[in-house]
Length: 355
Length: 128
Image (tube, rainbow over the protein chains, first blue to last red):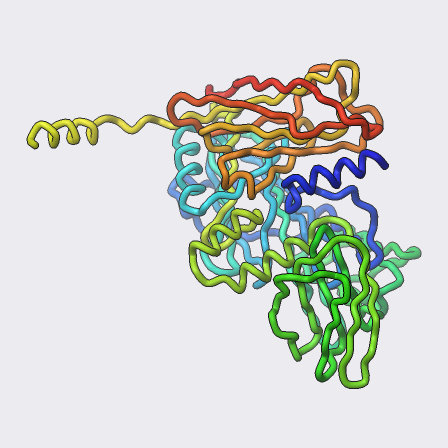
């Protein structure tokens, strides 16, 4: 317990956006684990001249669903089948509002975290490391939803794992939230832990329910989709000084009395009228109550602490979308570890040069 | 004037100093006390280009990076974390010219949550 207090202290001294919390399952969270063959990014035409094909071994997808936010970690495993070092470049789409916040390169048993940099600087570092023969990666995006992954100097026969973590809002349709993993290949194993706050859980693939745990196995093709309804009229999730308030369905003349929550920088600035109503912002720490009023609505909602830093990234992504100047976007994305039009993740393994 | 232009021309012809990629290992000397959590600041003119841990890579503070500092932190819930001279991180850097490194312990704790003050050493190992 004392260790936990110290960790909170560490987070407060400067690592709030990156430090993991000592995790325990939150009341409004669904844990979802998909292993073995899952979404397979399509290898694109080479952007660099020295591209050669990699053997794609597998893709693992793990996701955690908190209120309407999906935190997705995709791990792709490649092997260089050639008898010489090669480079690889491929691109893949992510949801419109996806915020990529972490990148890890694994070479053998060594796991190396990428660093967020201004995009042109990241490209310069990647080019120079590649020229000098170091294993290096660059993750950036050319257009709003298309990301490009470049990996240079993969030794003959070497295995490389590339892990990306991103967040996005779930699709909402007719009162149901939808989580989609595109292009499931085969041999999908899925484990989901769902608490009592959701109902009408359905899936595009057959599921086995064991208490709060859901498992999907078997050979499947096509997109995987999990759909569920949140039973609560409203949810107020808080974590590490950030909140997400979700109200469904919307009501006319909705007003929010924040009480003692001490909110700031709320996005969107105006309460939306389309469903579901989702507001995110900064807030004070500790438990709180907010009061929602509107036509035929008078409801007090207790805050619920949720694990991890999904809410911080959700807020940062919302604020990033509201910024317009390149300078503002770059500075904010660098401060919050997010890939944007002007920032990218770069990784150089200074211990490994191609042979 | 001609002399000044000549000197400028010579400077322009000089090859740009090549960047070096090196790794800097970060050690914590804890004595007999196991190390469960730590936070360390590193100051250097070099650019950090990746960070590596023993099992999982530590987290870094992106806001501190913008101020030219590197703040790394990590914790473990393992029942028996290592003690003695513990390699806590390997920081991959891009150097240009002579580069100095300095480290400062910000916080550290044992598995029981007691604050400890291990000595921090940096060892430059990369740059093959």
